[in-house]
Amino acid sequence: MASTRYFALIPAAGIGARVGAGCPKQYLPLAGKAMLLHVLETFAAAPAIAHCFLVVSAGDAYIDEVLASAPQLRTRVTVLLNGGATRHASVSNGLQAMRAQVEDADWVLVHDAARPGLTVALIDKLIAELRDDPVGGLLALPVVDTLKRGNANGRVAATVPRAGLWGAQTPQMFRYALLRRALEEVAEVTDEASAIEALGLAPRLVEGSVRNFKVTLPQDIPLAELLLKGLS
Ligand SMILES: Nc1ccn([C@@H]2O[C@H](COP(=O)(O)OP(=O)(O)OP(=O)(O)O)[C@@H](O)[C@H]2O)c(=O)n1
Ligand SMILES: C[C@](O)(CO)[C@H](O)COP(=O)(O)O
Image 1 (cartoon, rainbow, N blue to C red):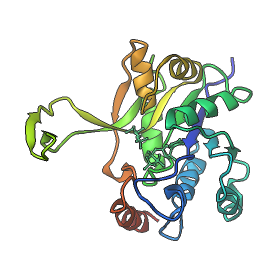
Image 2: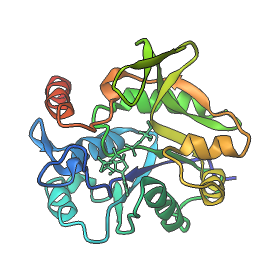
Image 3: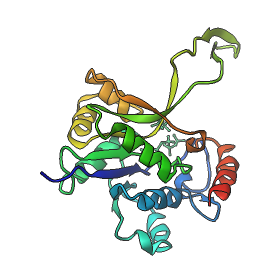
């Protein structure tokens, strides 16, 4: 029986509206290279990762130039020009396009192109924790702030108990066939674990890192820049 393999699937077909830059945020320069390139280079450097699949929008005008600057990625990354209108659709489309190269029992690590602080060590940690797990799971961080629910007037309506709460990160790691089925059967979800939960399964929480934060708002850009300058 062929040994189980680990594939990366990177949804990178968003427009970065909340950052509001002149280009999709995954192409913004951070520490001298595009945000997406940091992610691709990290997965390419991870010995456990068999191959990376990258989902970009059909009209993406940036990816060719980015990959031309990184010829070492040519054999490690396949670009899929089938991004969808939502992250869920992009991931589903990517999984569908991978079917000829991936076995049902292979693991897929879905990672946001908007989380450039990921490290090989975090990838290796997730795989080590989940490789024998019956479900799979995700990197996540326990909530450390007191949480408030706001009302329409911008005032506190309630304090939300934070015990047991985690903030989901990525990669989220599940077996190929299970993940495809879960995403096909569920309505719109914002992460892969939600689709697995909708099947009645309980993904495993693996502690991630603050450096693996998602670049979402303008103030995240200088933070990511500082982080990546320190990492390189
Ligand atoms: N239709 C979409 C929307 C998002 N993504 C990807 O999903 C990841 C996380 O999404 P998010 O941070 O929301 O990125 P954007 O959708 O680009 O941001 P915004 O919501 O501000 O437009 C990103 O790598 C983004 O490129 C995607 O592949 N396809
Ligand atoms: C997948 C994710 O990063 C987990 O926290 C998050 O759900 C993505 O949300 P977004 O609105 O698509 O950035």
